[in-house]
Image (cartoon, rainbow, N blue to C red; front, top):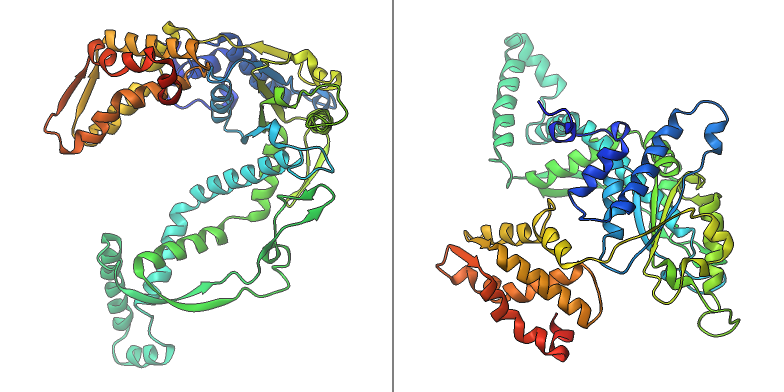
Length: 464
């Protein structure tokens, strides 16, 4: 028995993830970039360690935020996204260049925290819905049976009971059982029933603040739901639609929204991960006029959020002290040291990601669980076609992607998508009408399809 790979035997809970296991899990999806993986693995484990610390010191321990430095397509976003999935933590990706300084038209930096909370609420709500799914299905089914076969009125049931003790109820239960079997088999899906459907009585409004239009949408029904009754109207729908409507209503009734919000806020504050991409784009010149005037202002607005502050959301106040921030940028025109000193100090860990080589491209095409070749093979298998790539063909694809990156803009592993799309374009178009069930892609086929395009630099700029 192999004791070194428990992750392959059963799902790993976030608490059980050691830094080595985190790196091993990331290796399944991201090739190379070991330094970046180590840094995020340590940061994630430190969160678990902090939860175990007793006393006042627990609140003093803040996460070590990370800056990833590397050109596009080397794996920065994917590492952060996979890390969040492993931790089962709320995760959002934002572009720093989309934010504007307070006082300018555009999104303010606090919106990233509101988005994180919104996602956390959605995540917890989904988990709680899964927990009550079976009970909700059963109760929705019972309500639907009552619509299809209304129970006898009290008076008539009493008369029947006088004549035939308990017989009426026995017959009714037998009929309901038969009807339930038909319902589960889907034989009643097209029948129509009359159903009371809740209507949206109040609109969602946006709040206008000093920083412009906020994303802090407030549903008036949620805010004043206790003051106004929910409007319902009778509507005729199919049994299939009624089943879904009643199921959703039962889920909402069974899930305690107050507990969902409380848990979501706790998760966002203590487990949330915010990935701030294009952080280098808010590095401006020292000019006080022109297009760069608000860039340093954006950095200063980001500073208190990263440092730790309270942000108002429609679910309540959220503290950002223990949210993990991972910033990333190519830093072609600027250096991380060009960021304002205060912001640099809030990102103590800096990791430079490696430029991808031909060897890396070969591994990216073959090794990850979601490898590009596996994706195309799965797509074509749906048409009954089995596609195989020779070792030489894979190396040729990697070599061409490397050459195009060198000759034009270096977009990293994303170049493989454009190369593969161009290579398989004709096959993907013609496969449904083709009688071929086995297709072998060789190095010669790759060269024939792509070599002329690669040699013509102007053409490769537009196609690859």
